[in-house]
Length: 272
Image (tube, rainbow, N blue to C red; front, side, top):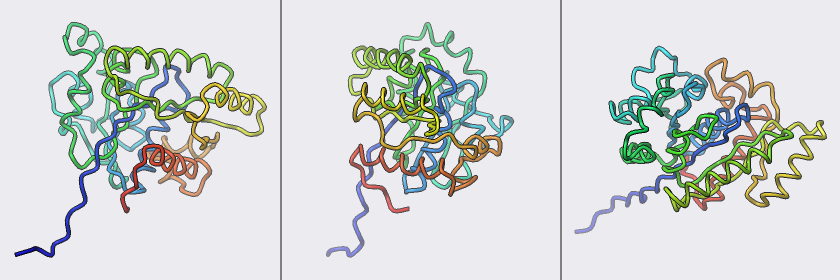
């Protein structure tokens, strides 16, 4: 006897992307929030891991600091499971594991642990099977938290501000990625470099774009995130810019970036 019930689609493999740059103010957290929202908008099930003690990704996704009863600190310290930390956001299909300032002390606590570089990788074994993308918002430094993110990730996405010292900071990060690939995570790749805060009226921005594309070639996404007031305003309202103002230039850029990320990985988006 045969069944006429449709065969469920195969589970999509989990992809883990670390958003990393040791320089602050490059749009890393803004990209984590809005790329996660854009991926969710096209049907992906997304989890943002806030690994920055400042907790700005959590705030930008509307998670009040008083509501962070279980954070990535407790999860990384082995005091709670990932499932206990994860909370939903106002964006369908997008959840977050929030952080607190307690993360500042975690590096010292992990120093004596034999698995100190793989704490996050071990944690992510407990991620829900429904999740198709994990985005890790790293702190703005190449510390042990960032090393954990790189050791757990399939690929690195690098937000790069269109400023004078952009390539200098990028070179340092690329050396770290090579070291992690050699010692901790041989599968780690560069998913892409996204140029942020681009202002076409600024000759320096245009020159930086040319320099970075000349240095990194097709590793640089075609999509550039413009300098946009609405993108800057959105976090103060606890919203991704796609919820705050879908039609603004910044929102449209992040939707294009999400499409590029999907295309680079050869993954067909799930129907929303």
